[in-house]
Image (cartoon, rainbow, N blue to C red; front, side, top):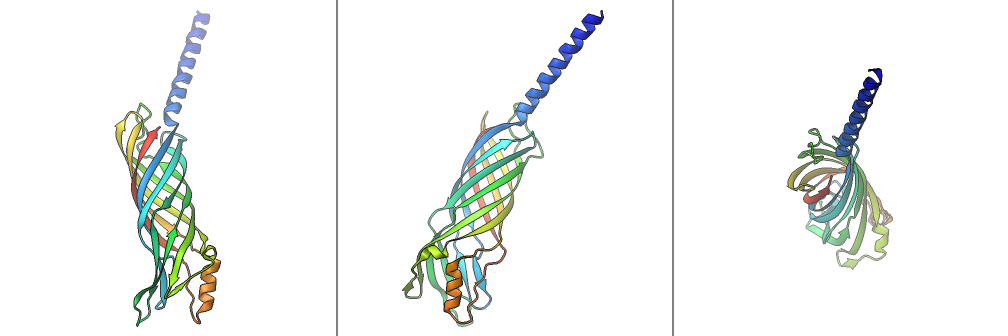
Amino acid sequence: MRKQLVLVAAGALSLGLAGTATAQSKGQGLAIVPFGAFNIPAVLATQADVGELQPKGAPFVGLQLEMGLSKTMSIGVGGGITMGQSLDFNDLSSSGTGAVGTADIASPRIYGLLSIRPGGRRPTGAVTPLAIEIGGGVALWSFDKLIVGSSVATQLSTWSGTEPFAFAGLAYNLPIGPRASIQLFGRALGGFGYKSTGLDDFNASVSGLELKSKFNLGFLVGAGIRVGR
């Protein structure tokens, strides 16, 4: 009798462990998310009543990789780049005439994120619709064809610079298959300041000019195809 009880207990324990492993596996997994979005940038650098560097909105394409840690949490890495983006040098003085210069720019971004799903996952392991996303990374600003007034700036590489940023947002998944969904998302991005030798030299070239980059707030809104768990 005792031997039979031991066998029953051992069987129950093995079933429990198998069930736990299955549940854990349904909370874990790998997903890839190619996406397209529209980037609404903030002012890159400004001086009150004098001028500003204002990037224009532009399409943004990227790729994100997510790994599940549990049923409610996953981590990820991603990156992307703006397409056909430009920037205006705006005159903000009382006698200002608007844009006095332009530049073609690109702002590739790399980032990491933490995704929290309050609803966890379905019994199949598929994600529930709503996710809260928080993360951060770095924007790699680069300039091309910089024109101020009638002058074409040289040594454009000196204007290239980095800007750390953090973001928070929401994502919503619409299932289109057992392992695929359309992922809609919106993020608010806080930039912590762009710096470059080119900006410093530009400020030094005009008496009283002190264009500076401060904390700024932009937005990214888009959609992607989430494939995997």
